[in-house]
Image 1 (cartoon, rainbow, N blue to C red):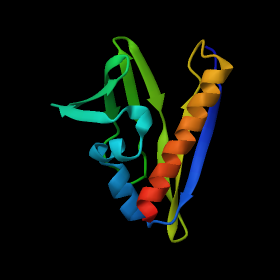
Image 2 (cartoon, rainbow, N blue to C red):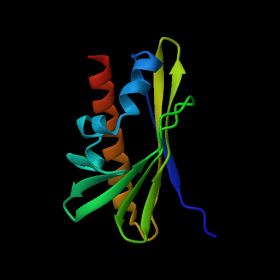
Image 3 (cartoon, one colour):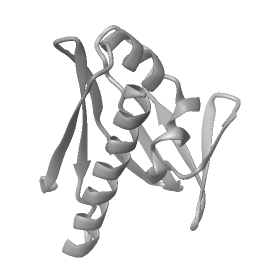
Image 4 (cartoon, helix red, strand yellow):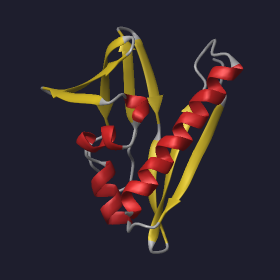
Length: 132
């Protein structure tokens, strides 16, 4: 089995960990900062559906937990699942938010770089939102 190239993208946020985790663990808040998940995210029973330029995609979120785990799975089409590990951890009076980006099979260098920049922008949006 091949190991995918990955990047851990992290940002320090001047927001207390409990407040940041409460915000981040609610899927309803993702459209406020995570443009990579699209601007439309709606609940459909136990599932979450996002609208993308390519059509609807299912998103599954890790249930609330005591460890700051915010992993989610994006399913753009049947049989395809993209795992997105994410964590928030205390850091002094604030917190650190980390997202691991895996390079998808066959993804060109320029697309991986573009996705990396996109995640950085989204985390900066999150920082601005939580520090306001």
